[in-house]
Length: 338
Image 1 (cartoon, rainbow, N blue to C red):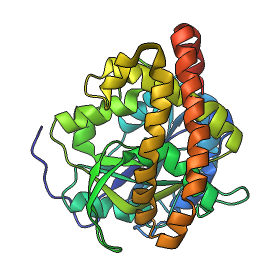
Image 2: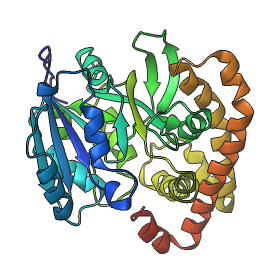
Image 3: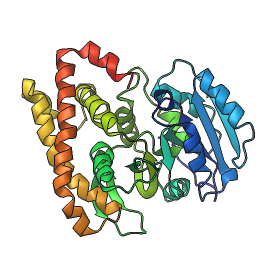
């Protein structure tokens, strides 16, 4: 690990937006760009990098020929590249002190960039944040059922909270990150990039492990919030079903992946995984809802709903593991297209 140096007061932030999810009709980069125009961070210190197919690049170049109010808007063509390869390629042209990764189906909240800069200036090498799911007809992320759903999907990144008061940076364990809400010092990414040999999947936990093993500081800022595209059919039938495939393979690719003992359960691995993940969902919910400053009565009142939705999500993952065990090649081909 190289020695890092203090950042300037308002460092240049390069935001990489890949068009993978836009190409699958899950949202548009235009929504993400609109949200970035509402950031409370100086716009002339934000560099936007849009990376996708040649068709997407042509549309972006026409739409953002004038980069104002941003420092710059760059469009990078990467035909045929999948999710993680797009992120890597976009980062290669970044000129900022901090590289931020998000998706084209994401709506960052107004304090998003400021929170990232604050966390990294406070000593973190990598800053991660909280993800929410959008409501049916707006980019609000405060619907209770969707708060529960997003906790089940993205809440695994939250470890033990050692100290936290509203308005303060939390002292907590971080166990992962979401690639649509991830920022790091540019020099850090130059050393540790996404592995692309697995296509659309798996690279995120492997990068997290690489960063932690290199000794980089990964910290969470509760105001580093984004609102993500959401549809119930996608959440259950595709996202969590794919998670089953990913979890099964990560246990075999990464010797440090949590709960390796589950691999020794043989044909019971899908069922044991479902039960174990449902057990873990309860403390994750209390960590997640606490960071959202949710009232304790609401937190406890929603617990039965959490358990019900947890059964659905983990059941989909269980089926994903079963299908992976039965037909690994077919599952691999399917997972890399979702």
